[in-house]
Length: 183
Image (cartoon, rainbow, N blue to C red; front, side, top):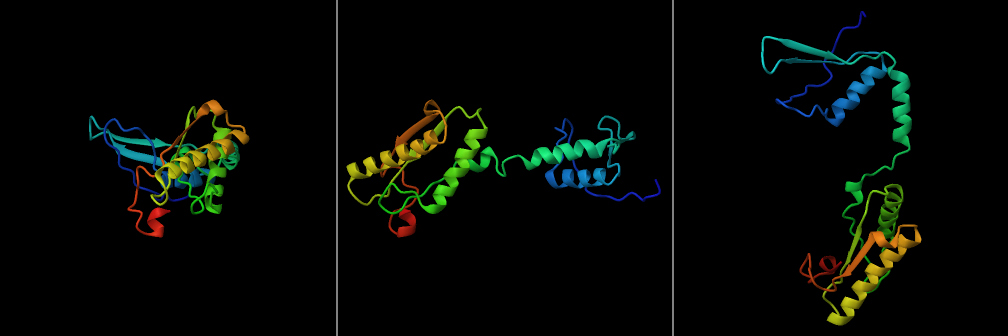
């Protein structure tokens, strides 16, 4: 009471909307609720535009629940499935040793898989560049796939959840003419 209302965001929805509020708008509303304000949506009824609708979010008993929510958020991983789903790992030239960056990436995947038991299948596809013999490249790619699988199994991921495939020098994503393209 006594505080003038202010617009914090503008939302646009169509008939049969999902009701999901965009991230930045949601955080703005949460901040307002935390300070005791009551964010309110105003819109015209889709079936009768002369009817104006107002839906207010109450700040009553909000702080305790929001505190629990923030505590829960702080214990979540700082990345999602989408962030690790298509992780690309690189190797030191000509071998099966992962680069330092790739090792940090694989640690994220291992951590995620340890938390999310709903991921039923982990697909590992390994490749090489086109330099060297075809047979040797095929063997290197298979060794690369198996070494990643071993890392996952060693971290407690069930072997039955992991499928590997070595592609050798097939399926290039670049021309292999330069060092950058080969990596």
